[in-house]
Amino acid sequence: MSSGHSVSVLRQGGDLIGFSVVMSVIDEAHLLNIGICKHYQGQGLGARLLRHAMSCAQLGGASRMFLEVRPSNERAVELYHHFGFRQIGLRKGYYPATTGREDGLVFDRELP
Ligand SMILES: CC(C)(COP(=O)(O)OP(=O)(O)OC[C@H]1O[C@@H](n2cnc3c(N)ncnc32)[C@H](O)[C@@H]1OP(=O)(O)O)[C@@H](O)C(=O)NCCC(=O)NCCS
Image (cartoon, rainbow, N blue to C red):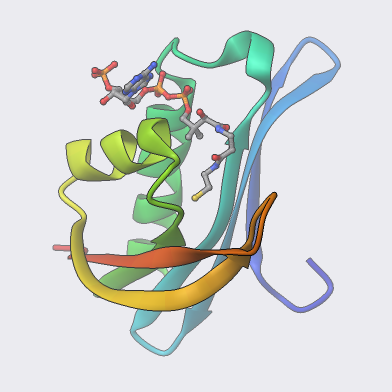
């Protein structure tokens, strides 16, 4: 937040149950992270937060959104596909893994 990135949170009662972080540079937005508390996953909240992050980025002037995701993170990959993100690249050994490193899939989509 102190770097000026756009942070959105989801709360239920007093509890923080989800967040997203987007870095925007001119007309490009980069989804740096999104997460929903384990207990609340699978209820459409990740989709709601992603939709919100995309519209905030769009209102801020972005025409495209990028992100990286681990190939093993099937739920996140499914969520991004669901929202029209498509793979445009691969970063070799991008993420630390339990043993060695794991590639990062680079996804993007236009923000119409
Ligand atoms: C990825 C994450 C944010 C998704 O949030 P969520 O609230 O569980 O997702 P939703 O319930 O909104 O589901 C949205 C879509 O994701 C997909 N999805 C959700 N649960 C799924 C599952 N168990 N298996 C496969 N796909 C799934 C579906 O396409 C779903 O759409 P649908 O319900 O219309 O079919 C959440 O799982 C999370 O916080 N994971 C840990 C952190 C993380 O990996 N962040 C991403 C870093 S790149």
